[in-house]
Image 1 (cartoon, rainbow, N blue to C red):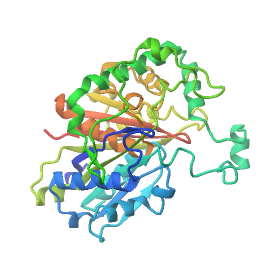
Image 2: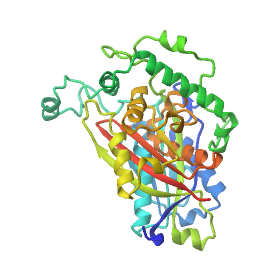
Image 3: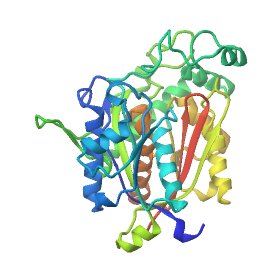
Length: 386
């Protein structure tokens, strides 16, 4: 790729991740995201007047997250009115797609500086809030094509299908989940590098992730009951946590970096987006991984570490089986099972964490992949600037 059209990550950061009805439940999602964005802009030293666009991923675009949440974030943050903004929904990969769109805008020459990320308050806007019995996205054609009942596609059922196909046991899923908590717990102060604390108007400060259970055990996880009616093996313990959070990245062109004498933290090497069977739905990270690699002539052996979103334990375990990647290289600081999964914000959170891992562990290249509702997935490859 011509260096003139490179997209660079100047900086990336996130809020702490709060549990459902936990420490961030009372935070307005617009203010939560605005706090991260303002802090990130201040930390990176860029002039807000230079921002060409703001792209925000959000799944529950209704109520507090409605009416183009991206534009409201810009206005609530007190940033220049000249900055346009757009909100997008690619389900769990929304903010990774926001970053992909930002990078593509820069690489095509239409922008020099874009802020992109995501937000989700699942305490205020639970999953499924945008539909109801009278307003259901299932058409007769979809129902007939996939033999659906009256409901929508079930991600939990998809996870169980994958586990059964790969002959996974309940112990396999719980063991993976335990390790997610243990890795996140062992990360300790490393997460402070990527978190911008949230301050409520009354001065209360939330500075740390809330979902990590350092005292859990395999026995405790094995005693949990299955969480979804008619779905075997999938529990609250081996699923991602329902959470609140926001995250952003500042993405710039080669010209902007050079003109402003900025040393970026990383650069984007490749992106991909794929569609897969929406019934099992969560298999997408595998083809997304290979599509991102193939696009730039790389192989899986060229990647030093991986972030595969822990929507459910079978997703990552299946990805590891298909790719043959050493588990030690995957989700080094734990994942969404321990940290939480504020769906609209998770993709850019993974970018933030990946940069943290690459820098602290002195690695060079990382790959991120995330499964998405409706049978889709996104992936991207990041290279650390040394």
